[in-house]
Length: 168
Image (cartoon, rainbow, N blue to C red):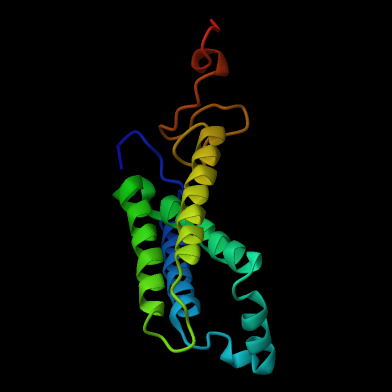
């Protein structure tokens, strides 16, 4: 992290909790995507949910949504510290690996459709975080309501300096 830039979560305890949440989410996501019967604990209801979602638009949305959250968590937790491209590459590698592993798991299907949904979710998660950082006025959520900077977080440039043909 650059010395003049504030982390997204100011306290070390908050950062630690965010890292734990990200790790637990990654483990849970991996379980849901590669286990033969990930909802076994729900009994017949879990099997009914799994079969109802399989090979539908809901399946695509499910994959996209979980990867939106995963990419956002990785970027918010580690993006400034370890690099945005590296974190997005990690999320993409996870999506590719889980789809590849499904090929050998009984009862699971590895499909390009699911892989496309995973990658679309990662791209959308990155966009959501980028928009959030832009509106927060920095690469962290530390700007106050007036747009003033705190702890080295500079406000976003005015729209007039970004839009072509507009002068301040």
